[in-house]
Image (cartoon, rainbow, N blue to C red; front, side, top):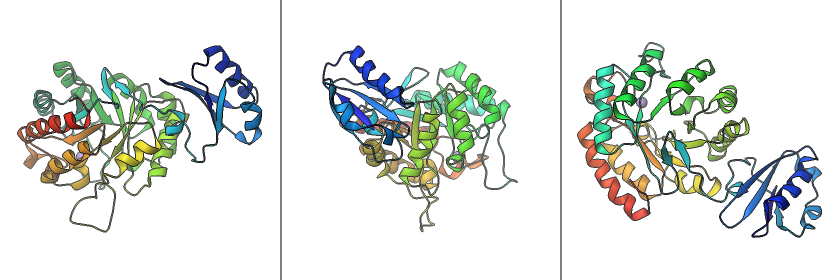
Length: 338
Ligand SMILES: [Mn+2]
């Protein structure tokens, strides 16, 4: 349920109404927008009589929110959320350009790629230290040593770090070393992990869409993190499973306008894992920016032929540089600064 206040309602009057609601044992969320202030009510709202609230002279109207997600709901927060990742803004007219190798392989590798990515215009560095692999026999990542290499690359380039968290046991270590904590597609519905990340993670969270998750399931996973105490969630579409087997997954660009309609959270696109082929990255990245996404996460490798993971879908630094030049022009047209 949402209470919309009349324009120019004082903070004191808003408080008066919200404390009446809280006295019934419900939680309230006040969002002060540019034009209007709203109060979102979370909990069993059947005990609230909207007519009773509408009696107040400062209340414009009371609305029911039928969707099961509340905190992520656009109705609860009409303006776009802009998430600050260690100084890099994501959302609104800011575009996140996240680049780096699938996996951290060595210090030399990561620093070389980080420098090239930064020179191309990237504003964040990605790298997997803990890898969720389909096969237990495949390279599982360097773990803590890999995170330390990313930290060294950040020292060298200043680029904030994005890396995937697979277990709640490492949340404190990620709080210390990583700037944007990724929850991977395979963990999107690991609800215990989502709750722990909401409670204990002090950094923004990048929540990838599950391989076969609906928009609502995906948003509900964001809601888990937000309801547990971490409001800073960025969504990432990375392709979904369809009947097509030529490509690794099918990139769902409709997710961009849909997520923006349903939620206030930023959405970024990962064209690398979507197509699984390096030559699909450029056209899909351009289409994603044109469609209004808030960022791109792209795998870049200095030597894709020898990459320990996802070489076939990785761009070489030169190709990435050319792509960002084109993204800059498209961004200009759609009102995104690069
Ligand atoms: Mn990868």
